[in-house]
Amino acid sequence: MHITILGGGGFLGRKLAQRLAADGALGGRAITGMTLFDLAEPAPVPASFTVRTLAGDLGDAAALTAAIPDDTGAIFHLAAVVSAAAEADYDLGIRVNLLGTLAVVNRCRELVVAPRVVFPSSVASFGGGQDARVRDDERQVPTNSYGAQKAMAELALNDASRRGFLDAVCIRLPTVVVRPGRPNKAASSFASAILREPLLGLATDCPVFPDFRLWICSPRSAVAWFLHAATMDTAPLGLERGVNPPGMTASVAEMLDALESVAGAEARRLVHIVPDTVVQDIVRGWPSGFVPDRALALGFAGHEPLADVVRAFMGDDLAATKADRGLA
Ligand SMILES: NC(=O)c1ccc[n+]([C@@H]2O[C@H](COP(=O)([O-])OP(=O)(O)OC[C@H]3O[C@@H](n4cnc5c(N)ncnc54)[C@H](O)[C@@H]3O)[C@@H](O)[C@H]2O)c1
Image (cartoon, protein in one colour):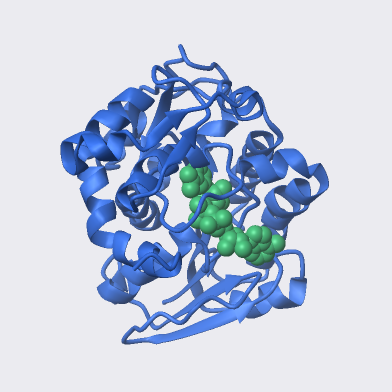
């Protein structure tokens, strides 16, 4: 089976590619080849099967055809413009997050066998704010353009699944913590920065107050959910291909407690609360809690504790992040 990762050069795309390369198989089927597709050509990933790395734009039909060969069994559609960038540039967000997904649907219509499409939607596709406890039948009423584009893409993938063009599972990912590398344009960038930067020995500003709560998950859980979504029986999903996975609620203070428990009080002292109303205006609309009964019943694994998330970053990504930022 061939596998394509759109957005394969990004944070989660790269982690997923490394995991698939290590596993060599997906759902008991041998992987015969993998394509990593992104705006800039992704770095190669060593594997026992052929890995192609392609540069291209989702909006370029010929590039997408090259990225999704006819024997593709699974597509991980991770390519996206993230939250603050999509809010700052409406046209770009629509072009990539909505029209790019419709382009993926169109390419799938040309394939003889409908591929599984795993699509990370987002917690940002819901409103409700700090006090929300989102249930599985909650309507998606986003408070930002990124969330709206994700919700629209989900609807398109629901309908394409109903029509048999593809077989989608949309995972409404929590904010993924800890993101390696540098701060990025996601409004939630601080959620990783308050753990990552002190572990690098760097000070960082936190734009929200310590009691601010977020719905988060680790990169390890996100990748595990992607793999489950790629291999699960989709019949129980029916027409609704969106799933709220079992992330966890964490306040900034709880995240700093976890940091301190692993790295000491001096690490915690590197985080300074500096309120930023632009960031607050985006993130305060996002729900901080879910009741993910459906996902648990569908076999999505529950979440590990916060201290393990900090330790996993130190084990998986700290050295590479230090090297990347010239801190090694
Ligand atoms: N990281 C999170 O906290 C989080 C939370 C919820 C949902 N998600 C979703 O998960 C997916 C992966 O997130 P990530 O954190 O790895 O993001 P990322 O920004 O690291 O990766 C996304 C990749 O998509 C690529 N891309 C953007 N426009 C493209 C285009 N027109 N054509 C081809 N490639 C394009 C980017 O270059 C980037 O490498 C995204 O769809 C994101 O919306 C992420």
